[in-house]
View (cartoon, rainbow, N blue to C red):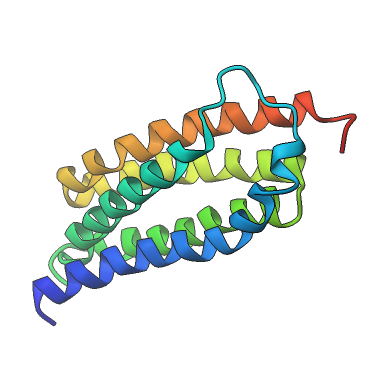
Length: 160
């Protein structure tokens, strides 16, 4: 398979995961989510789409850099599998938070996702440092999203 095709598939996979997550997100944005009490530090809703698009593209490039080394280094295949598992967890958060409207379960899941991203950073670093560096903005955003999820949960515990 050509490197260009691998790059395109890697980015498409990540953007596809974002699209699946949005199937849970969009129905909740206009109704349930707007009824929640918002923490003061919550960004406006329009910020999330562009940020996640950029992050999914960076994730796709990172995946490509590691996938491209499968067969060349022993750590590349397990790192790629770990990435795919983590991507499913990324989608699961949207299903829990927006789909099921379970702020508590979403918070527990995002803490697990955060740990998986930390593990992924380490795993990718062993294969290609550039791939690891490309995941740093994602790690920082999910760190913020974890705090934001907790704040939403605490502010709305008695309103759910």
